[in-house]
Image (cartoon, rainbow, N blue to C red):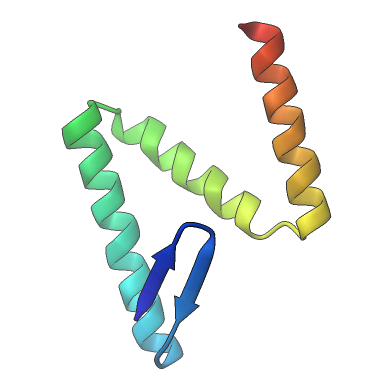
Length: 77
C-alpha cells in the first residue's frame, strides 16, 4: 500500500507489491495527464523521469536543484 498525504508518504507491504503498486500509479498518472491535460506522451515521460531523478537526490542536492529551477523560472517570466 502506498499512501500519500501532502509531503508524508506511508509505505506498507512486500517490496514486490510496492513495486507493482508504484508501477500502476505511474501508469495511471501518465494516462491521466495525457487525457485530461493533453500532455504529449513524450513530455509526460520526460517529466516522470525527471521526478525519478529528483527523487534519487539526497535532500541537499534536491533543495539546491529545486531552488535553481525556481530562479530559472523567475528569470524567464
